[in-house]
Length: 328
Image (cartoon, rainbow, N blue to C red; front, side):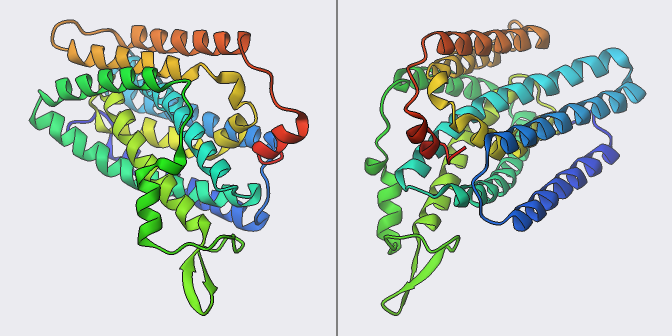
């Protein structure tokens, strides 16, 4: 698994993630259970995006010192493209999280903790999957074609499913979880277990955590192969992925209030997956430049968001909208 990043940058990255998570947990503990406002979510989103761009700047400098500015420009653009792809695909995660929270009527003040735990699980899971994927690609080049075909099929499936109502009640994973564990009808604060009739049983919040974790697994299988179409450097794949995930919680609360306005976004994500899958399958025939890939992704996202805003359905009355978005 060859990488262009020096060892000290790997160490700096790991330390930065640990510090960021620690700070997030400290803030979470001091604030306690509370509904996240749009202003707070926006501020944190700016912080996470700013940190991601700052890290990319440091990455550019480190590569430029050892390999020159031209190579650094290419690698920094690979990071940026990968970050943007993972960030955009994370939007689909957010819509599923919103559906789960709405279905279980999770109080707004408890959602923050659930997302925080989900993010930590996603970081561990994706780190393992990325390192395994990098090893597979380095040993078996043909795996790239498998990833590419999978992304094309996933994009087609996503397009087909877009605009259709999701029925969480018929979800097989939810049915299995309910069979495996008795669940109370009511929440017990932020606790995952409670006592009813002298028996220790799970609260709905534990069920929500399990479903969020399962969602992380499903979307990791979709999104990780996507970035391998941009670069096979494990450092760029891992760092762009993790930095996109770190801002997921803030982005959830930011987009939850305006989810209805971007009702066409899933179609754009489907097109992006098909484009990236095609790029991956053509890698030995014609290598699409990173700058072109970045431009295509940005154009598709911008075009889809513009069309969504032009054709957005009317939002619910203020009171209802606030309730659905955690009173933000």
